[in-house]
Amino acid sequence: MPLAPPTLAPPTLTTPTLGYDLTLLKTEPPRGTEHDHGWCYGLPPGIRTEQWPLSPHDGFPMQHCFTLRIPVQYRTRGDAYVALAMFADQQYDEPDEIDAVAQYLAAETIERPADRHLLPYFAYRQNRHPMEFRMKDIIDHNFAAIWLTDAEFMGPLCRPLELTGNPLLEANAPPRWLEKGAARTAFDAQVGRTTSVDELEKRYWYRLFGRVPETGHHAYGIALAPRDGDPNVGKPPRDHLLHKGALGDYIAPYGEDGKARGLERLHGRNHLGGTMFPNQWTPKYSATYLEIEEHFGGFNFGGGNGQLDLASMEFDWACG
Image (cartoon, rainbow, N blue to C red):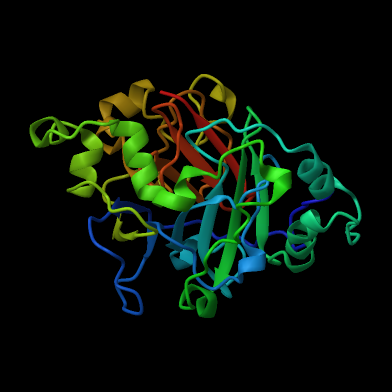
């Protein structure tokens, strides 16, 4: 496989006894403090420019969505890997595929290309981060995640590779997030050109940031808090219809018992573990999973949300 996952021993998992709610803050992350749980938008830490994941579709650097410091019970790759950086293809545009890049990144062997304009992709493949995982959704959009050590999480921020002007990529304009930053790009796509303060204050994304995000690679901190009152912490999520015979003791939120317990009160949160609220079918994931809403990094889930299994490193999302 060209961009195959790392060759690792299967993760050794313990059953989580805690779940966590994750809240996007209106302020920058308090880096280097005990309250630094990571950030959304902005730039990733600890990797080198040549390790920044490149899109096998349009050839540009993939958007950094978030870097999250993972609590101990959810560190599925061992104690050495304490954080996860997530990247995605362009979320609000549909660029053309660049055949030369797609074919080179899909090649079975890593050979120095004759075309010098492919050299950035040669350097990326040679230096690819050893803990980078690749994922694809049902509509062939690419995602990447990199498990980071503590030193990497605490390390300097990395800037994306400069590929604007590469003639291989001229079929598409550079991704908007490269110029505007991921937060401003997501805000503009969600809110449009509204400038009236009265109108802006009615918009969810304006209230989310508390203002119009500034242009640039600005990061917004993540608050982490134990998830209270969730009976499904430590239980693999299952669908009450799709997995009727394999529910175990998981309480499906839209099943009879889940409704009686009022589990819908947990809906709409970014969180680790516990009750899952997918917009369509529940994927058959482990108990160590992450569920995120669109604002947690500027995703375009069509009004829905996404889930990442930290054990299998599978990613799924569905529109609302």
